[in-house]
Length: 114
Length: 113
Image (cartoon, rainbow over all chains, first blue to last red; front, top):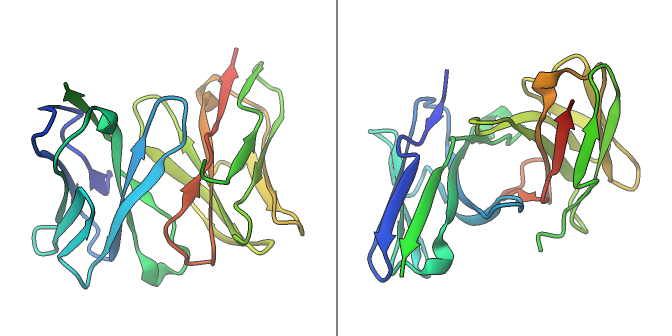
C-alpha cells in the first residue's frame, strides 16, 4: 500500500511559468512533509518542508501548500528555470512514531523548457 | 555537496555474495538512515541508527544488517545476494534522532549479475 503518491510521473513547463507538483498521502499520522530534488547520479537534495500545524511555507521561488483535510500537498516553483529540471520527491514523516523515517513518493520528473 | 559520503559509488558482484556499503554522515550528525531505491520504486526506508544504537527498522530483509560505529560512520551489510537486490542504496544523516531534514549521500549503485 503506497502511503505517499505522486500521480504525475512527469511534467513539462515553459521557462518563467509556474510549476505545480502534487502529492497525496493516506496516513493521517503523517505530520511533517518534505520535498526533495534529485539530479541523475546524485542523491536527493532537500528543498523545503512543512509541518502539519501550517498550511503554507515559502522559501524564495519555492512554496509548499498543505491541505490536511484533503491529505494533499503541492510544491509551487515560480518562476521555473531550466536548472529546476530534475526529479522531485515528496516525503512524509510521522514524528510521533519517534524514528522520523521518511516515506517517499515515486517522484515527478520536471522538465523546464527554455 | 551534502557532506554525506558513501563508498563505493558502484559495486558489481554475483548472486550469493556478500557486500558492505559504507556511509560517513555529515559532521555533527548523530543519526544515520539507510534507504533502498529499486527500479520504478521510490526510496524505501531500511533502518535508522542514532549514536550507535538501532532506532527504527523498516522493510529490511533478514539477509541485510547494519551498524553504526563509535566514530558515527555506518555500514550496511548485504549477504546471500539475489538479483532483486540490485538497486541504489542511499544513506542519509540528520542532527538528532528526530532531526529533519535528512541530508542524503549520492548513493551506492549495486548490480548483481
